[in-house]
Image (cartoon, rainbow, N blue to C red):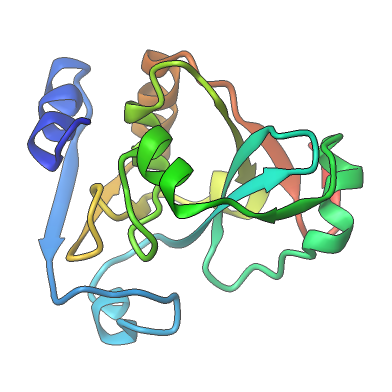
Length: 167
């Protein structure tokens, strides 16, 4: 599994500019409000899910976005959704609960995880994610985030959670 250092080396190799703030571990969106005040841009919540068909999903949304998991499967064309098992999270994204991040897609070399991006987050600049651990926050521009995804071969499914529709 790739480490934080590997992630930053990947950024450098792809011309992605990042700024990282180390801080005490944060496990939930509600924690670390003081940290977020110091960092401009969109702050994220990330959900690792598995559907009834066995497909793995990662949802990255603005922290304040309401996500209706009971209806979302109709929007994204999946089976019914539930939280994914921790062992699969570690196996595919290389992270543990509390550290789920879109940057974990760097570890999904078999592309087992489908990525859903909140439209509101897609419209935010910069965006802030944990760099594979919840003891830091890394900010990158929206353009660099898209460069990161493209370098991995990941095409996000963009969902407007307010309208519950695919964009």
